[in-house]
Length: 317
Image (tube, rainbow, N blue to C red; front, side, top):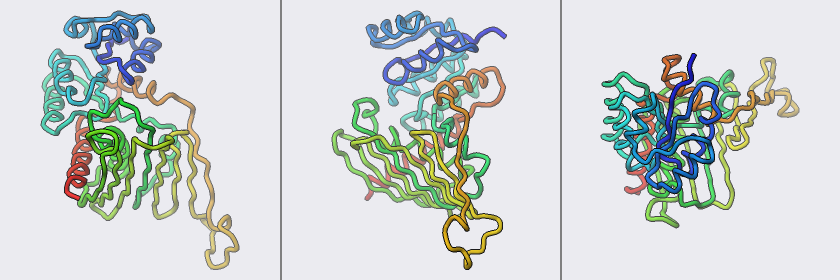
């Protein structure tokens, strides 16, 4: 099968990595990149051995699909332009800056019969992949996502910049359960937007998520803990590792002398794979119709809707 002709729109902190991976793909052919910063665009194009297109329409005329890694406020503008040209789109998270803009993207994809995938990369995390065989009815989620400050992403609050990763994971792992109550607090520290936030979300059916995100931390931490009736997951999303501690089938709680007699510790391991490369490969497959996108436009919209509710709760606190 011929390689899929693709392009990258926006080659800043994230987009340049899209270009790097696509340039080395066996299934995609990187036709070129576009960026409004010509110096940066030409620099990245030279680094990965492709063409810089000063004119976005020129790039769209040569490809079947694009990945979009432009600032969030222009996601809809750029994405709709590509979708209306009949090009499939992998949109970096969040899907858009508002629900009306998200709906514009979803409708454009449906109208033109092309794929729309959202770049919630943690779905491809090695620890998440390793945990899947053991996942059950999760009743409590606890996530901590901390990062040192950097200018990238500060055009939006930390809720849309970082926390939305975990909001998407919680929605996905709770099988899309509706959020019935959202309480949150946050503070702007270094930017005009909220830089540190904590949210408590209750879901239909009784599950609860406690989620913390900060982009003004001294160290980078990405941890997720999941509690279900037969055990507990401790996942290090940064390292891609974790453990599942589950009740032994023959345990006798009253007679146990130690935790090890009651609980079996299962190391979680999955094949090593770069999450972004896996995400891009899945996008190429979805463009070809096999299978559907891993994170659909509707799922991206759901994560955005919950993130906006968290932002509203912070503002009201």
